[in-house]
Length: 70
Image (cartoon, rainbow, N blue to C red; front, side, top):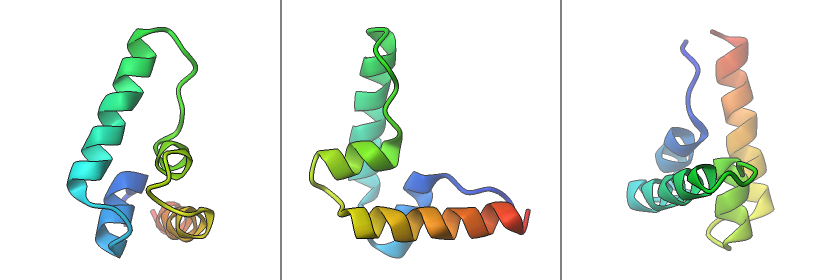
């Protein structure tokens, strides 16, 4: 089993839409170009109110399982 990106996992779980993930990834890119500290995608989605801490935790838990089995 290959590693999965948190955005892909959130889309699969129905937590976030592909469009929302793309929008937040674009925000991440803007932050990187400005030289600011990179905010992880899941944290960005949570801080902007699109996902809850509980949803993020479940997605991260699922991601960790992918990493264990890869």
